[in-house]
Length: 177
Image 1 (cartoon, rainbow, N blue to C red):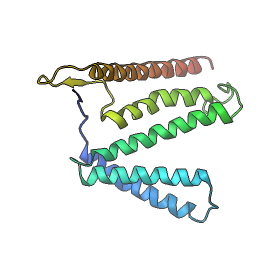
Image 2: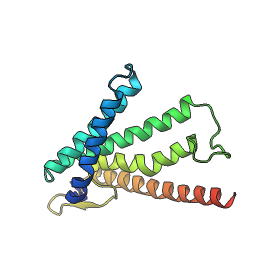
Image 3: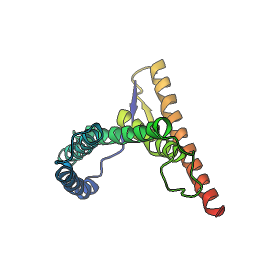
Image 4: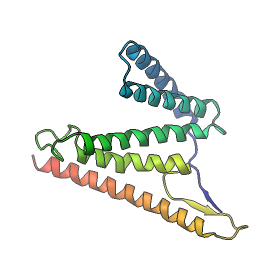
């Protein structure tokens, strides 16, 4: 049976980030409370509430609250997935606007999804971003273990390729000015 090597929680970092995120969440709820109800507002407020809940759980219970960080990672994945779908399906603009390379575009949404969304998805389901698999010696290796290791390595290499594409695109933009 496979057992992913989990990345350790960083309690000092969580003690710094969690109060800031809690303040941000309270501020967003206060600012948006009187806005007319909409699906976008509800999804946004639910997302930041889930992130805050996950960070509080991971901060208060560092050993057993690791699932809180997985909630945060899944919300990040969902946000990048929604951004990519919005740019490809609902926005009818250029793939990348040459006049404003920092404006939202399908290319930037794809790069963000590959570079940040996929590793967040992988962390949400395995507890680790890098495909570090430890096989227990007492149990035989199953076909499911081999498939899981291949999926994790594919996700890792997709992340590496996405980062290289992002660096290449940034260099092309920088030197083409």
